[in-house]
Structure formats: structure tokens, C-alpha cells
Length: 312
Image (tube, rainbow, N blue to C red; front, side, top):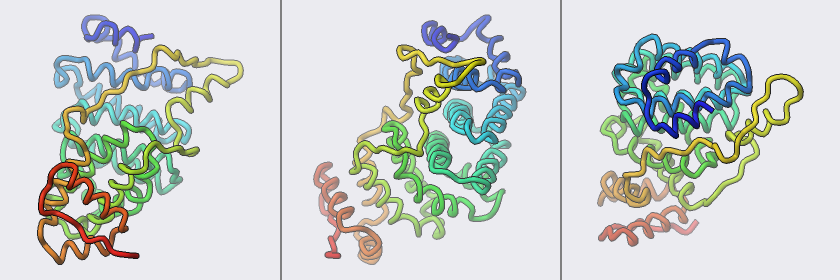
């Protein structure tokens, strides 16, 4: 109900400001019905607040991060942990987040080592994509290197490349692919040979996502999955989802050009006419991927660029 009222008012003031502190009370987050109902409310608050720096002080930020940590530790609630973390990454300035970033990432890595699932990894990838899109790669690399030097390369290889194709939500896939393009365009990525070795694989992954169309996955649990499960509960506190009151999606990439255009611009800027790089890329790519890239070049009038298509 609060979420609906926030969207109707389209602003935060007066009593709604003080109500935010009620959301940080630990007791609210020990009931499954409450978790589904209020986890997305953080996003509405942070989106509508006029002065985020004033509104989110140290106490409120650590309170939100504490809820994120609590939900992440619960196997059936990690989806909502990432929902809260995504809102934090999307709306709270990096200056406030920087000192917590190492611990935020480390908590997920520990959780993945304990029990890795497709849903967990997909949510992690999309959340990292939001951070990269908003803040670039450098801050994330610094935080990862504080955990272990080179660990971001391991995240790319063992998690991102392994699970990115399993992200099913179309908006999440758009945000993820644009963030991947932005990541590979970053000078920090280009200057790191350990990361550049994944360039062909990442490009192949993006093209496969572009060309795959809508996906189905039984293991990737979406919000609708959790809502349906809660509605099936027996006696006790229940959550009943209102079909007309679903939280609207907010596309942080809505001002970007066609992702395929961004991709071909990236490829041309990195590969250019470097024949050695072209051959390395082609040898590490499927012929159908090279064909698709060539079609993007034609579609967006990128002249004098064409990848060889090997017969495999």
C-alpha cells in the first residue's frame, strides 16, 4: 500500500520521510510476506527523493545494507537482497558507497562459494551491471582487488560468462548488455590484459543475447515466482500480490542508442584494422557471431568493417 501511495504522490515529504526509518526496523524483515511487500519500496523512496545526499545519511545507508546482508544469507530471499542492492547502486552516489563496496561484493562471493545457483548468479550479474553503468568499472575493480587481486577476472569467467545468457527479464538483459559494452569501453578494462583476454567471449555472449529472443528458465526465480509461492502459504501472515499494483520498471539506459549500434562502435574502436586482433577474435568466435556483427555494421552504416567468417 505504501508503495502505491508513493507512486501516486510522486514525491517524498513530511511523514513519508519519517516512515522510511520504520522500514529499517529489523522486526519487519523476519516475515516473508513483509519482505516481498516492502523490498521494492526502497527503490521508490530513493527515486523520488529530491536531495539524496541529505536523505541518506550514514545510519540509513548502513541500515539498508544490513537488511541486504540479512536477506542475502537466506536462500529463499536473496532475490530481494539484490532488489535492495540494485536500488542502492542505482540511486546512491558512489562517494557514500565507496567504503562499503568491498564488503558488499565479498558477501556475495562468500554466498556463491557456499551454494551457487543460476538465480543467485543472474541477480548478481544484473546488480553489478547497474553499478558499472552508473559508476564505471574503476570503482568496482578497486573494491574487488581489495578482496583479492584479479578476482574480478574470476567473476567474469566463472559467473558472468557462465550465467549471463540465463538472465530472462528483457529489461535486465538490456541493462546487462549495455553495461558489458560500457565495461569493455573503459580504459581500465582495455589496459588490463587479464581482462582483455575475455573480450572475444564477452562480445560473443552479448551477440548471443541479442539474437536469442525471449528466454525461459525454470531456475531463475523472478518476483512473480516468489509472489505465487507466498500466496500458496497456509495459515499465518500472508502476502497477496495485487495484479494492478505491480511496481513499474525504471530503465536506467533509456537514453542510450540501440545496443547493437553501441556494440559495433565498441568492436570497431577496439579491433579497428588490426589484422592480428581480427584473426584472434575470429578464431575465438562462432561463425554465426561474426555474421551477426557484420550485419550490425551494415545496419548502422559502419563502412569498411567486416569480419572474416570461418567455415567451421
